Length: 125
Image (cartoon, rainbow, N blue to C red; front, side, top):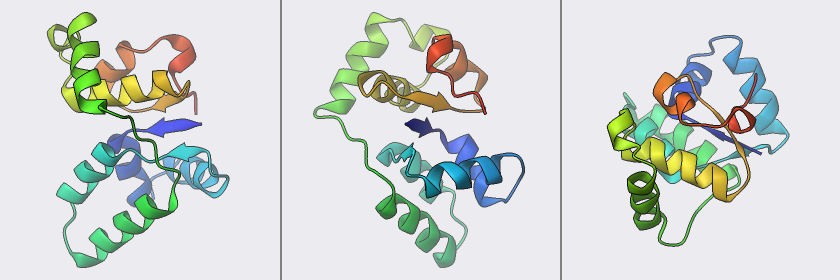
């Protein structure tokens, strides 16, 4: 399974290759976890009602990845790993933490986020 960052979903919704084809394949084969914080970021950038509906539809139809006390546990994880000092914000910390708990890979265009991952945690597209 793959945790997909906002940056990849943006490329997907813009139909930009190679992200569109690769993510489409993963979505169709139910290999993508939906994280609420990622979809919240996507919704925040939506330009109209139609975009909101599309984003909501993807969120509702993808396997959900949630963590009990996830934000608190992410805050501890970030503090214990000094992620703030490395320029990694809380949402990216949540993505990393969620992926590790669920033994998933992360697909992102964010260099700081990717730098905090082990090689085995990076999704190679």
